[in-house]
Image (cartoon, rainbow, N blue to C red; front, side):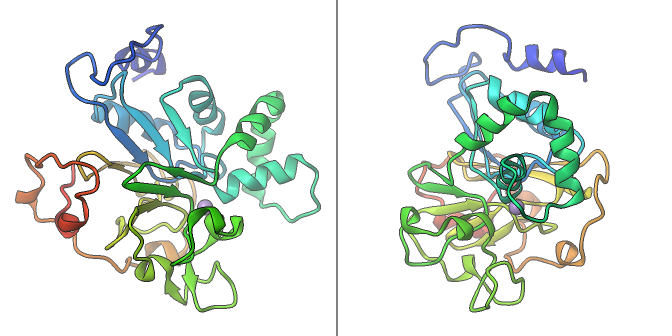
Length: 282
Ligand SMILES: [Mn+2]
């Protein structure tokens, strides 16, 4: 599908949007929290088409909008131009800001490539990425890029933890060998995060990891807050070779059986914990 068709199909160019809690087809507003995009624009479109994305729906991304994948510019242009789209800052998004700010750090080849792709309108992209928050509070749920230290309020968390934390009890917050932070976290809000790709979503009692390595050729996954559903689409291509850490299985519950995937029962936000293990998958 070409992009212009898709935009018309989901109302991206339909002008004024009525402030109504219902979509044109009468469906209620959905909050679609999407895993790490890394420039995977086509798969984002595939996902939104699959969901019949409407005028009153909104997308919240877990960050790392760019770097490694094929269409960084298209992803950013969509988030900049359509108010239904928002995101937290990811570590790669931050790294691009640091690169452009001339900080004397080591940047990866993929980051330098992304910087070149976006150079023609650097001011616009710098300004947008600088505006991204470290967390987005959805009430029952909290969106951060990587993780947080259990027992500390989100506003008191260190930025580097929100951007890069994987495990506790190790010298480096990025270590994959300690205890995953989300196995310890027991806060009231369910945390929706990305950053640490796995073949399937990471499913903890109070957190859901949504990075299923689309840029590595696996899937793009999203979580729908109001109905406690996961939805995903396959990557169209392998854009980057995945690391061994990516292909290792996450420490999670099994995905629900096929008979649980149909006719999901709508749930109000905040009632998600009780059915965590049986979350329907679209
Ligand atoms: Mn990341």
